[in-house]
Image 1 (tube, rainbow, N blue to C red):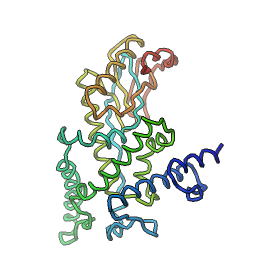
Image 2: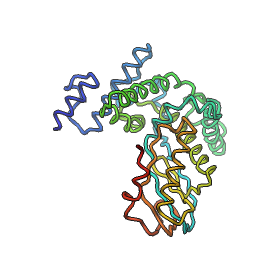
Image 3: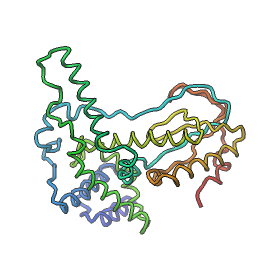
Image 4: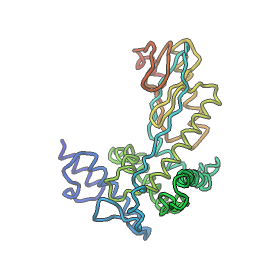
Length: 306
């Protein structure tokens, strides 16, 4: 029942059940992650940026409208065309968790702090060029934002990583469904402006790292001679080059295993076949057509681990 779930959730998080609120499950998740993150921050003697207002206390930077106005656009890789071979749509989950846990591997792949800083510098310089065209004396839009904000929020990121590690430990050791619930929603919390510990800089950092991991994943797939038709944070569509559905699914299993086993950065990502297409035509996520194979569940049994 709802009450039993709430009670068990409160026990897991060690929060009085009356403090969880009576709203939707997403609100309960936000409260719990806020509290668990705040505990780790306090243990590390880190100042909390919780504010009585709807905006976090970010040392005055929150007064700049641009600090909150910028939306992070999720990347999309699109390769339009007609594909006569079997194409498979893959569902991608836990990309955010894998990115956070495998962040140390990013440094080894040249996705280091300087690379991330360059992205922020390029964005800010682009704003500066546009502003100078209108008025050379007009200050840089968002000047209060530190160009090196990716490094400034590194301490918070390390604590966020510790939180994710703790949740992952609870999932692997005690099979906690509550920890699993929180892990699946960690990025939703990270980008939720209603969260008490919402930090735009931390969100931007993780989002940038996720883009790097996605691009690297696509490159790895291409190294295995896979045509990537479409890729985003939650979905990848590939052309297998196979004419038989069963062979295509077996080949997909091989590809997934190869990518995850040979690169620790991808070991926490869950990639599973969702839809099989034949004679697939793809223009963009809203415009595509093909012959959909309805018996995916039975034909993909061999893809299920264990």
